[in-house]
Length: 313
Length: 221
Image (cartoon, rainbow over all chains, first blue to last red; front, side, top):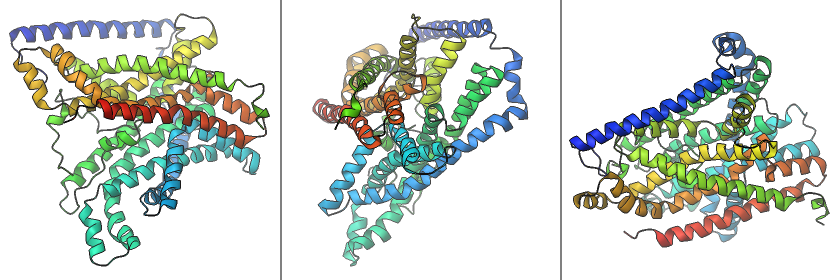
């Protein structure tokens, strides 16, 4: 165990680390004990409150339908936002000022506005100007809000993905006599799609997390709001929130791991140009995203830059 | 033209948004720095805790965290954060939830800043006999903060937008008021434009100014 930030530990440093560990254990134990006693005081640890999660009833009545809606909204939003984002992203790279500037304004505008505001706008829009039934409206509103925001973010991903390709690709395309549109369609886009994949999967995590807004504010019956209904029935606030959190963590953990795996695989691949837009690059575009594969940097301690063996772009 | 604004305290709502943002920003900067220090430090247990905290919190939707502070901490466990007035309690709970969530991102922004500090800096600091806390305090963190201003600005912008989630527990901030207004008034587009503009005014200068400051302060290498 070594790091550039501290020397290999001598006897004194080791003793001190043991002391720190001890103090830290005591602090953590105190916090856990406080959590335990306060939960116990309010009777939140009763087995009857946790039992529903180990029977199929709670899952089939509350959690699974909620989770289905969460996944449905996230998938719909992603599917609609991707082409929109691609168009906006390519438009921002246009040679023509009159295409580039409006696209930039649209992207920056929607990136500056909270998703919730867009969702509230969507809900009112559908209520006032369409005849979509009030049961469907929350889903439409949630998807609309997510699409507007994520199309803007995806546009930036697409732009960054195309810019990440080596310049020689576009130049070679021009050299063999392709038109601008052919260079984009035949050379740049196909290659950048692989480069963007990890970033797009990471963005799915953000979308999945944002669907919870619809449940809390717009009465969209997704995971969180069905857990809320369950709390009303069983009175198991703590247990339900724990379950929801665990489901979200499992879902997003698998997506992030998948994105990390994709990124590593693409970086290794000899066929590609080596241009990859990973989770790290995404932080600039969307800091709310969950960047980095799970557990990276936890092992080495100290600046991870030292172990960063990324090929230079 | 702006008669739909009458009877609504739009500025007051945005002031609440600003207050939420600033309080949560300060809180998450402190807690996030501590987390970052834990994650790069020599004590394995603290490193593990830091990693666990960041990865857990980042994967839970902020909405779930904020709703939990209200339903779980306040209603079930009776934690009022030193107040009996429900509006004050909700405001403080929202700040608490935002701090818990945002600090994970602050930690990661700082860690990416620490990554930009060349190895030689830390090595030189160790060579003249500084210990871990001195290396971090005197050499690495001052440089890391300067190069993290860009990423931290992005986190601050995300935080500003995330304060709208406090609407889930009824804090009277901008999104809560917007929802109320679009439900009661028939002028959807002007109302939405006002709120969109409000957020653009809040987030755009933050990005521009801090981006400029970040470029200005970044250690030239």
